[in-house]
Length: 407
Image (cartoon, rainbow, N blue to C red; front, top):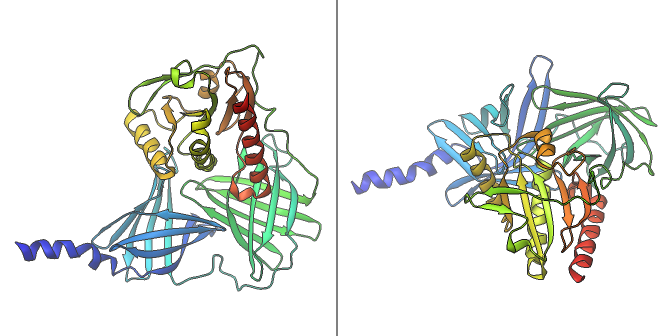
């Protein structure tokens, strides 16, 4: 019996030995017929006889520690988001399988392969960058179409390499950490974080970015183009969502994950500065904001700040919604209340907040003073990938919080 138990205990180690540690190149095959592939890099490590993955997107590192081996299969769940990989191991240097996005009902599966010891992100020989993409760009997505929208493109080169980092700022948030390169004048950028599966390509004629293509997941596509414009700005995110009546009172009442009803009228909020976060565990920008707010709460809660998140999940299954929220809370050590609204989508969010003109994006953040009067409503979130924009947002937010706490 002891020998049998010992062999069973060794099985995870034996199975992990079939998969080599080090850097891998993963590829999501967005469209095999057209040869549209989204590459990203990840590192495989052994920690306490268990495999861990670390996904690389520019300066971002995503730890994936929910990993499962069974015979020749290797499956792993992405942190926070309700997505997973199911793969088969070939030898010890090749994975083949699929990425499954459980938040979608259709087109939720994308073919996936990964190769060991492939250090490049895109399949081109690195060259010294020409800096033709470096800087700030005024960008039009879907220009001359009904669904057109503006963005700011921010691109920079990693010093001493051929690597380009970048992101896009829009009215409703940013596209997080993009990484890629320039090859023969053409731009290639990608991002995979467990929710975003983004691939950008474009050309540059010296003054303008042209022939841009943006692929998102299995079916998403938008065209884009840009021009250098160091002074271009987007509309003020604090003016997009507002109180219909300046005399209106903000209110909510939803259950937390412990099935207790929480309302703004509760004693814990009385006389406190309150931040209300409209969010969802499926939302990458909400993930970035949650990480920031968790830190903010830890620093200011004892001084009189309360934060409460209202979660608009992509499922009406209460148990699944609760599980998704609990994963988010655990990942970012969130100390404030996260409430389950039981509602999905921006339309339902608007219905649940009838005192507001509309909800344009997740996250949307409402800051109240000690008397629970609205001080600002911020649409979207400029995450850490935006650099200066993120720093400006956090500085302004913390200055407002300190001002409201002092009154």
